[in-house]
Structures are given as structure tokens and as C-alpha cells.
Image (cartoon, rainbow, N blue to C red; front, side, top):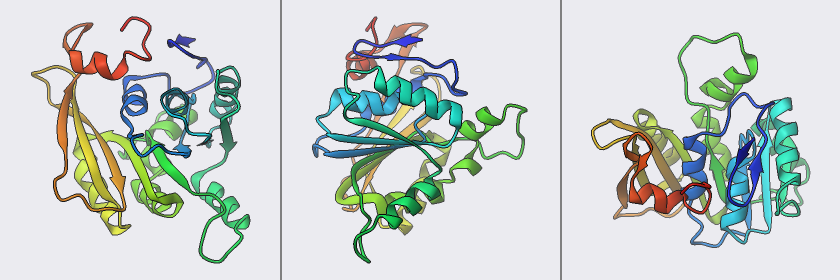
Length: 245
């Protein structure tokens, strides 16, 4: 179990455990536009959705998870949280989830449900090799949720003023932005993450919207100056969640 200040995460049935990437995205994702509805694509343990339930007043927080064990654990984590009346997890792929929404559609032009904030910590690796752990492969390999599918789905599922927030390897940042542009989604803000002051940029946190920003705010976040010596910026971002921050 991983204990946060206001909720706990059981993760014994999940291939991907609680990690810095999920915490970063959950703490960083923009909520200035006061989202009413939120969708977490590839929820895993449910960490990011739970963080957004804590941070925001969103009344409707959905999550989708394709792996059965992770789905069941996500449901348990939601039910055991203080916000269980606002959280719901679907056992489905992204394609199946969208098909279900289209089946519920009441018009020819709009889905039955749209979201003001969509978040995703998508599978990273696109190399040709696999491990013998199918659940971990599903959680980590890009062919389970290609960036193309993610941005295309977001362009349909987002409300007019909605925001898509993701965390990706820095080396994938430019490709993701190019793919999003093809779906009329443009970067709203970018934060590039380094482990230490002297290390290379490891991750990019990118938020997208339908409105093109001409002066794109880009900043840098350094996690620690030495082992377990966290920077003021990282503490400020995560102190509402980590017990020892």
C-alpha cells in the first residue's frame, strides 16, 4: 500500500506501481478552468484520478483501464477514498469506451459525454522487444495506446474549452505536439522535468487545448539536488500529497 495524505493506494494487483510520473501529472494537470468532468485514460491504480478528486471540485471523474486486475484494484481504491461518489472506472479499451459513448449518443454531432479535462500517463516504450509479463507490457508499451489514438480520441472527447494533460518522455515531446496539431490541439503549457540539476531532461508534461497559444509558457522542474534532497519547486508541487513533504 502507498499512503498519501488524504487517500491510500493498494497496488499489489497492478503491473505499474505508484511512481513519480503519475504523481507529477496528477499534481501538475491544469485545473484553472475549473473542470466539471474529468477523464483518466489508462488509470492503472487510479492515482491520477484520485489526485484530481482531491485538487478539484470536479463532480464527474471517470477512468478507463484495459487490464482486468488493474481495473479491479482501481475500483477498490476509488471506493475506499473520500471521493467515492465522484469517481467511476470503466473496464474497457479507449476504442471500446468511445464506441459505448457513441452508442449512447443522442445526436449525430455530439457524444453523450464530453470532458473538461483529460489526463493520461500513456505507455512509453515503442521498441520491438517485450517481456514475459503481459500486464506490464500492456501498461508500458506504446502499441497498447499509441499517441495517435490518444490525441485523436481527446479531440473528440474534450469539451470546447477542455484541456488534455499528459506526461511523456522528453524525446517524444515534439512528435506528440505534431500529432496533436493534426487534431487541432495546441500546447497550452509545457514543463520539462530533470531528476537533478546536472541530469538530462527526462520527461515533458504537456497540456493541450483547442486554442492556439502564441506565447507558450515553458518551464523546467528539477526534482532533487541530491538523493532525497528535494527542490523547493518539487516540494511545492507535491506537498499536498506526499506524507513527508
